[in-house]
Image (cartoon, rainbow, N blue to C red; front, side):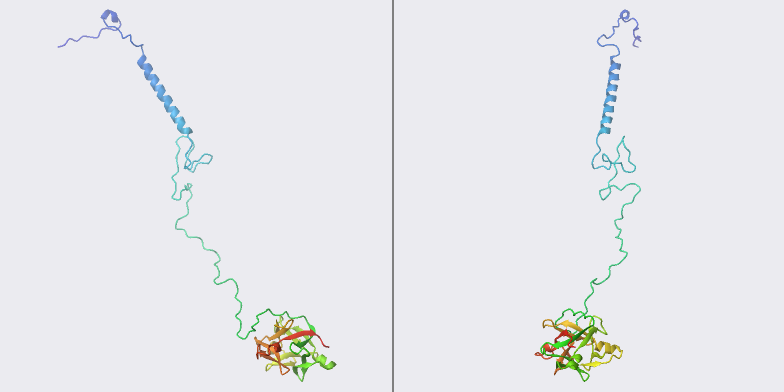
Length: 277
């Protein structure tokens, strides 16, 4: 068996033949360990401070100068909100719009068809010169002179209206009429004789008759003035027979379709002049 030799007592190293290590100072190992631990602590603190002071990335919701979204905190570990599908985070507690949501319908549906009213279709017998009607004059006394027979005027004779030359005072009185608003249409014209009768067409012939109060009489006695191709003249269209105008034929006033006879269009044109009586 090997001899069990005990370690010499270190209390008297020189006496026992054991010499201490004089190449390093006592406690050097502990000092190195303490210094290394202190250095590691300092490095960890500096790293943590540097991480805390680093600016937040611009792509984060926690941008500098703006409050953090719900659930995020300032300082310490920085948490970033998960971006939504549209690229912007939805705040906590709020729901984004549904992808399948349809637009809200208008409370008042758009009316069908065009908003601009259509003008009524022209009748087949309307005048070829579609010009605005001449406004009906206020009640005033007038005589009616022919365009192509300037020395002849409307003249009531035997109940009919004829185209006659000017005669005596009685003839002048029978050739003078009071022009009033139309009985059937206030924008048109009616003619009243000196003895209170009205000029109306019956059997397409112009006559002087008493008003019987009927709707037919009011329409027969109403004429709408439209400009003539002759300067300053008018044509008088029947209100209940559109396309038919007063014209003289054989010096008798009657209602005919405009343009009756290619050489007689001036028969439809008249001047309303100052009263002869």
